[in-house]
Amino acid sequence: MNIPFEVFRTPAEMRARAEDLRRDGRRIAVVPTMGALHDGHLALLKHARARADVVILTIFVNPTQFGPTEDLSRYPRDEAGDLAKARPSIDLAFCPTAAAMYPSGAQTFVEVRELAKPLCGASRPGHFAGVATVVTKLFHATLPHLAVFGEKDYQQLAIIRRMVRDLDFAIEIASVPIVREADGLALSSRNAYLSASERTAALALSRGLAAAEQRVAAGERSGAAIVAAARTPIEAEPLARIDYVELRDSEELTVVDRLERPAVLAMAVFVGTTRLIDNRVVGS
Ligand code: AMP
Image (cartoon, protein in one colour):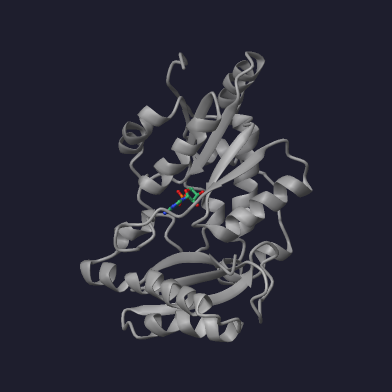
């Protein structure tokens, strides 16, 4: 694609370029990220590349999705390294400053109600309103036909799909399966926080998911038993502390007592002070 690579810093400049591309009949895909790129992000870019003429990567550590005691200030940032890594897979990048994204006086937030209440929404009040709002703003800046998200952030994906449906966004949402290390750990920018012993302890999450999956394969249908199977290896790990492990309907995210249709086994676990999430769809 003969599009000169550029990094845009303001929504207005990004949108002007996207409007030109649309006028030329190009199909635009956007991949929103917070940077500190890893192979999970690269899988999203690859998916975008296969399905669009123009791939726009966004890198923005969005302050409104972090709680007051969370890791906003120490979240890993390496824009130059990220752009070098992503460059072969993208056409344009949108890396705005917080001031450009949030001029003072903003009063409007996008809130997806029920889907944002459980799981990470319960532990991180306001998080998903921050996510839905920033994703809306990133969509308005990049004018995509297609947006690609990872199944790693399962609840986020469900919320964005619902937002797009409820608010009539003319954007297709695509998802990419979780990319894992060879030993099972889901790739995450936050894995960089882990010490060597915590890195080993973090395997408890994928072990828990695998244990639950085995129980399902053996015929278990009780939600409580499936959750208990997932919790056991995590509770055996001294460096791990469960935030939640829950079995939820794969679309509505309502509690599943009996597995009768696909459900997501979702978990958040502190390993040391680092909060990791993982999930697996079971019963499909
Ligand atoms: P983040 O930079 O963590 O906000 O993530 C940006 C996008 O990458 C989100 O759509 C995530 O779901 C996706 N993502 C992060 N980690 C992974 C992974 N291990 N596999 C697949 N997608 C991922």
